[in-house]
Structure formats: structure tokens, C-alpha cells
Length: 107
Image 1 (cartoon, rainbow, N blue to C red):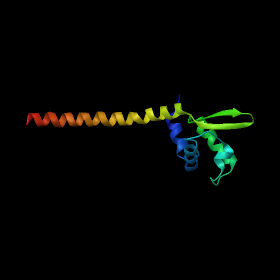
Image 2 (image 1 turned 180 degrees about the horizontal axis):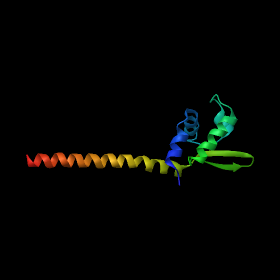
Image 3 (image 1 turned 135 degrees about the horizontal axis):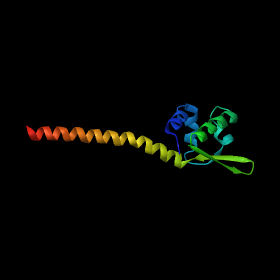
Image 4 (image 1 turned 90 degrees about the vertical axis):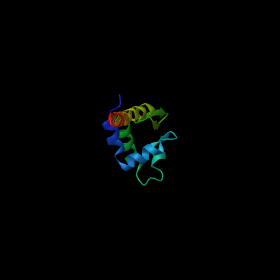
């Protein structure tokens, strides 16, 4: 199960967010991800390890290459966690609206 706090911490780094965003539409190796980013392949590999540990990236072997892709399960779990805030906000809004409506009916 994804730890939302760990995922948010992982995405708190700008370079990691860029790496994660580059994986959004395709599977890549660390070398491919490093191209054009201004960071070394080694640095990208370290960022990928943090994203993997946070449950946001999975790795598969293709011969000697390691290919990385977004772990949809991690993204879905993070989305569910964030949706909890939306659910609480809507619930509070509903209660406030019902109080105002009840007060208006009494007046």
C-alpha cells in the first residue's frame, strides 16, 4: 500500500517531479530520462529509486536495461488520499448549507 506522505515527500523535489512527468506517457531508461534534463544518469537513477520506494514508479528488466514507468496503483492511491480532503470539504459545505437553509425556514 502506498504511503501518501512518502509519495508527497518524493514529489516535493523539483527534479523528481520532472522525472515523474517524463514517465507520464512512456516507459524510459534512466539514460533516456537524463537526456536534456541537465542532470547525470546517476542522479536520475537516484531520483527513480526514491520514486520507486514511494510506490510511484515500477521498474522492469529488458536485458541489461532497466525500464521505468509510472505505477498507476501508486497514483490511484495518492488520488484517493487527496480525494478524502475533497470529500471532507463537500461534507462541511453541505452541513453549512443545511444550517443556512434551516435558519431561513425558521425566519
